[in-house]
View 1 (tube, rainbow, N blue to C red):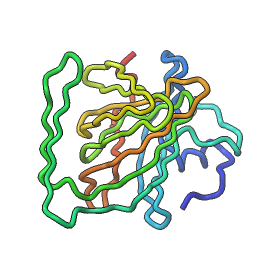
View 2: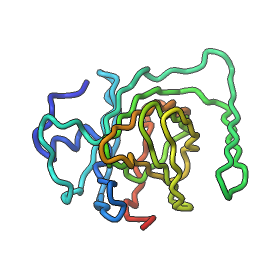
View 3: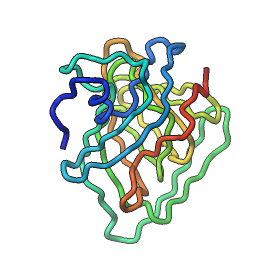
Length: 201
């Protein structure tokens, strides 16, 4: 359940993940600590952010920079299922992800406002991301390559690599559908990284 629209930056940061503006890549805001929680009652994800004092407070009726709506509660396969993903990024070797138990899935719609960026984070398992509308740039801390995805594209986030992503547009929202695999019982689908420094200047 999402509460009434927040009226201050402190209240706003209890319902979003990341408020760094990315319209100009050189203007990154520092994040001291990020936490994640799942609100089971309403089936929504809530992201908390602390230490981003440089981010200007928005008007109460503005949408949050990143909003997440769960489309399914945690689901699991009823049959014995295993998955194998292969991923080859430009300039890298093939990465193989074997999931002997790909269950504990969560499906979510993520809306990213223009210029909004996720903090550095990982996931407990792989995430299949579908870009439904707009554009998204995905960046892993390991190589700092900016990988662009457009409406109609999909990509595999292996989960265990620290990464960020942002909406590069100045005026268009980005809408994603994410299928999170391997979320442990009682665990969060997103795990903020302890180091929120500017890893890829």
